[in-house]
Length: 397
Image 1: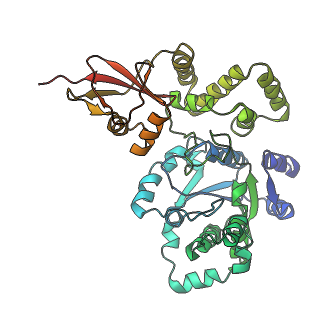
Image 2: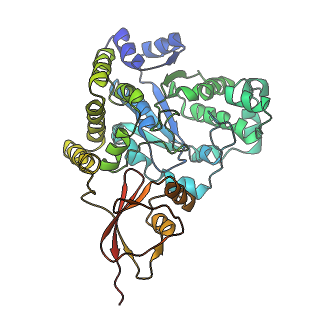
Image 3: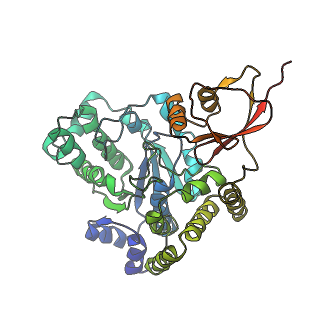
């Protein structure tokens, strides 16, 4: 493949590709590039925001380049300050290890597992001694750290910035040095970290990596980037019906963006999507949901998810399959019931949904969070827009 065509494939959907002349020089050498991609296991799921990056990595892998996926099991215990106006909560090693457990299986749904290296950065970062860290810290100045937009805003507003947050981009840069990365791929919010990595590599006498950034996929709220921290994400491992429903919940305004970044539509195809959105937004969004489920599961799973969604949200019927909970004869507090069934992350979230009139029993709104629910016959509890429970009376022994 000639260099021009090679670059066209690499450039597709990218925001930054720099320095371009360094990339061209690396490609002319005729050897596969070492391409780095990292993700901190702050939650157990990869999501469509990660998929945007993994899809570009698949392009690079298909061109013959070597993909190294770095699971940030060490850096996750610090917390990436990118785009944050406050310090991230630090995770324990146990939380990180559990979250990272299924990462390789999820990455393998996009990349060829036989051609993808997965490495955990604790295997080298945890071995650095104080002398090593001091040497690493001398690669960058405080003044340049404070040029970072989120650090600058926090500094001007007197919001605390802790020293360990300055170490995060340095450690991420050390990852690039350790694997001798030729290129690093990630979202535009990572550009500062990638630039620091170039300086770290030069500090250790290594040729710096090329930076490739991609657009940030907006989350299901239609406002902020898709993020595990914000809870506005669609996970690789979401069941088909839930994945379909989440896609259907995104605002109409961001539908073309999902076609572009997740389904990889080109400009001509996107123009047709915009035309269809103007004429029939509901069916255009439904086609998007169908295609995304098919991407991660199968045609049959996408068809079943579509049928289930139409059954619940168009025909206003209960789902054909629901988790079942037995309610004791003495009853159970509605907040405890919702929380214990795993439909919410906290009891306060359950109370909030009740106050928002988003909890219904057999179609009737429940407004009292102190309600002790007693049932005499099989009932359906709906929580929010897409979560259902089948309630069954538990008989006394």
